[in-house]
Image (cartoon, rainbow, N blue to C red):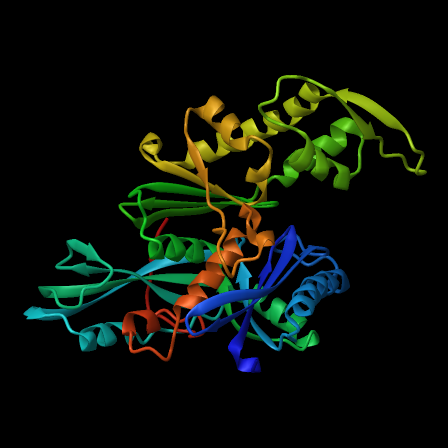
Length: 398
């Protein structure tokens, strides 16, 4: 198989580094390598140890390379943190009641935009608007006086871009472009034809929680909160005197948020000199530590959600939503049914990807496989993540 037939995406998260290598031959996308390692020396915004950060990226990359028998020489970088902003931009074309043709859409895509010194910016089509009223994904063939293109502009802090580019130069991997998870989530859901008009997507991460609100199938609100499920692990470490690794195990694998049987759990106590001491703790006591922090986190989230939040469907993704019976806890506490946004279990998708912690990189993979430069489908060509486009003015979503 030729080298050019493969692509790779590396997600830089505050908890883990994920890598996927995939091919897209004959419109049959297939993931051939997956890697995952714990993030060391980086909290999502600041690098505390350059060497540890590089080593954690290497581990993830090498895992995927061994599975695929392919050496990564270039890649897309996926980021999700508070240093990323998403804005809207609208440009229009006056047609005087004529029919919209492909050439009109091409004209709308040719935006000459001013560079921003502090940000790397990517542009993606959100939707088209007919006469400032009708919203559509494909306006070709419609008759109107004015057609507008509504674009999403993702702005990534240039300092972080420069930092990551320096690291990948040391790894001898060329960065094709940067992507952000929020835009990837929205375009993935949009591409899958949203069944619900109004959605609240909560990406419950390790150090950050990303909130995306979709109203009438379009982005209406985006916010990143500097809190995450790490707070739960920190509470367990403090209250139970255990190691952080064991706290993570308790949080995800042991404690059930909807189990009232209250068994006794044996836990190793963290001792400075490594003494093998174990305590027996009631399940409900540990569960109370977890739910107390969850309650605090969701009280913070609900304060910033719209007043009509009860009329939205809730989607969760991210590692924090993997706590046992999280779904039942949320329904019991807040009265809302929730669904999990997870990679589909299908051919070409390794089983390791079938959990919500891989959803953001799966969305990026899905979008890359929709871009086919060999096809004469201009609406697909418009949104290439590999094009860096600068813009002159933008309108904040928030």
